[in-house]
Image 1 (cartoon, one colour):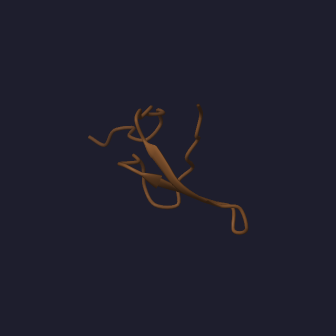
Image 2 (cartoon, rainbow, N blue to C red):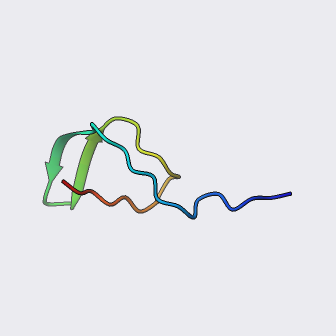
Length: 45
């Protein structure tokens, strides 16, 4: 039977912000970010 994958948030620690491109509104993160392509990522301190 199919499940309900992807309906929960997954917190990930110890990621490193490598570069901030404010002209194109891009944030470059080093590490494994869960989720699919073109997904929404929330960055908190």
